Length: 221
Image (cartoon, rainbow, N blue to C red):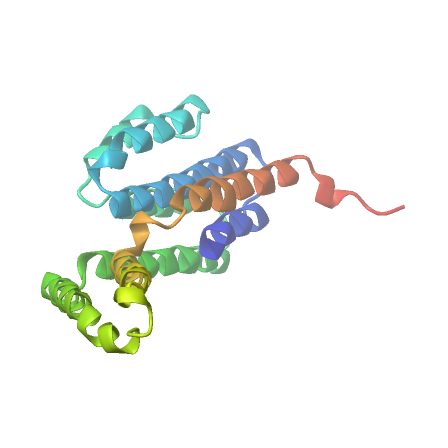
């Protein structure tokens, strides 16, 4: 999140205010938003393709991206890297000091590294054997648990307390197992849409609007 914001912030700071570079600022912000949504799409899978396409065409409608870029991006084997490459291409068009360009490129390089880290997590799931072993052990344990509870709860009438005790323990142990399964693949439960739309895209647009309004250039009276 912070590195995506830094790319937009650095572009606002380093790019001149002439019409050409204002257009490049808008395009770089749009490509940053496209990148993070493409990364979400990679982590969510093909079921997210239609949503991604509609989001990218919203950027086309705003004039920040071409339909050809959208179609090439959707056809790319690695969509996040495609839009990172688009960000680098936009940066290359900016006529700014090479040191400043290197700082923006360093932020983009960090996004490349973080994309690779996400790919490693996503493509390295916990072996299915571990999950099956835990499930089978837990099932066998709970099936035999009444034998252990029988004597301990013998003071209740006809050992009736064994039933609620078994249900209570089973509920929490199976709950712990389910939490473990979710942690094995966290991207399905994380609020990725909130990260993409609120924390990155909306914040980037707010930064652009603030710079374009020239509110930071006003001197206090």
